[in-house]
Amino acid sequence: LLLLNIVSTYNCMLPLLVFCEFFTAWGQSAVEMDSSLSEDPLVPLLELSGYLVQKTLERGAFGVVYQCTALDTNKTVAVKALSHKENAKEEISALEQLKKLDLDKNNLVRFNRHFEFPNNIFLEFEKLDMELLELVQSFNRPMPLSEIQMITQQMLVALNALKSIKMVHRDIKIDNIMLVNHQLHPFKVKLIDFGLACHVSELNRGDIFYNLEGRAPEISLGLPLNEAVDMWALGCLVASMYIAKFIYSGACELGKMGAIVQLHGPFTKLEVDPGKRIAPSEALRHPFITMKYFPSDFSSGPSYHGKTVASQNDRPPSLGTLQEDLALCMNDELTAASERTTENNSHISAETLPVSTNRIWDGDQGGANRGNMGSKVRSRNCFFKKIRRFVSRLFRSIH
Image (cartoon, rainbow, N blue to C red):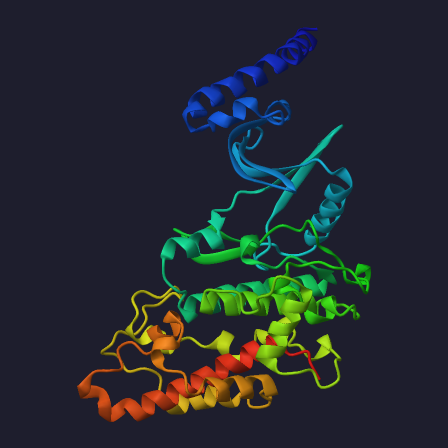
């Protein structure tokens, strides 16, 4: 009887205990809360569901993302609020499919759970650090190739994992790449936002997705689609991180296709074969991804590869080493576009090159080093061929 009374009393007191716990946490964190939350109609729903809402992380056409503390786990999480229930359920379906994978190993955002109200669906995710775009904008400098390589490698791992479960992301862009914890794990990133993700079998001719800057030509031309659309978008992203602007510009489909033709040359058959585009697993073995040192690193500061980058007084990798690395990709035939681009740009002066390209030549102009200039130039020529081959394989799709 005593035990029954204790259980009954506990059940009666439980709502009050939860209520007190919430307001204790709220009192401790009130200073950190976003003042605009007081008028947000979604905040009471989150509080009712056991969350302490700290601030709004992002607002967009898709919905709102909040930073919250989940009171049952006492963990800081990101909660995405969606009002379009049909789209939300499609995203949840894709996120549940991701649980088949090792999310941390494959650089994919961790989805914890979801809950519903009559007009809204809430999705709880792990809290990540910041968008890659935010970090890049804070640098006020072009990204060194060593950093681009790290991000590219992690995104290739993510796309390779998605390909293994026949999923297409359909929205690869810098906004959808987030740093996990830049202080503890520099340049460790994850792919987020699976609101447009679908099974490859659900892709249909004529479907229009991706912004113009990252839209593969087969989408624009209404041709058969597969996972290669994500690789094209990643290629656009890699190039834009290096040159600090979109590689293909254009205010409409025609303008974008014109930009592709201007860079790659005219289509010989107006036929596109995404099957010729490099696959994520193959790209992960490409020398650009497997290289440990870059010409720009020879005069750089700290490296994020787990070791200190060679200083100016240290010897860079020999020409022979770079040639051996390059031999691994000799079977990757340079496309006609790459050849034309190289020939057309051979007369461009150093002043007209992107700032990031000029950085690669830093430290090579001293008079005492002129005797080694020829070897260094040849090394860098081999290196740039490697980069061109990698990027051209990401874009290769035109017969």
